[in-house]
Image (cartoon, rainbow, N blue to C red):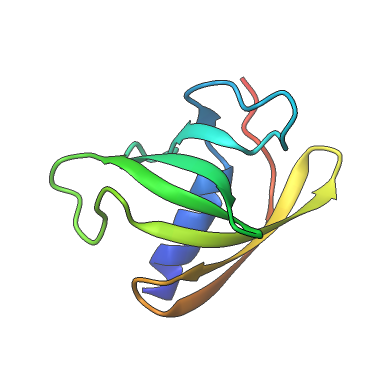
Length: 105
């Protein structure tokens, strides 16, 4: 389970945007498609944190549903990458995913 969730966190930040992020917000905010194609995710502020919320789940994908949310702690790790840890309130689990860089076309 931990390996799956670490992959999810990594996939959330190593994905291509489905729409442009807000010009005034961090570049990781906005609508994203997970690299493995299993979910679409909206990364947005939620209180003092940032959350990744499933907005679409491919039919047949188990252990994922629309509305599932991870509370993220994202820190800039350099000019073009971030580090991330997350809390999954549905499963009461904490995860660390290390350093992520955006996928370039």
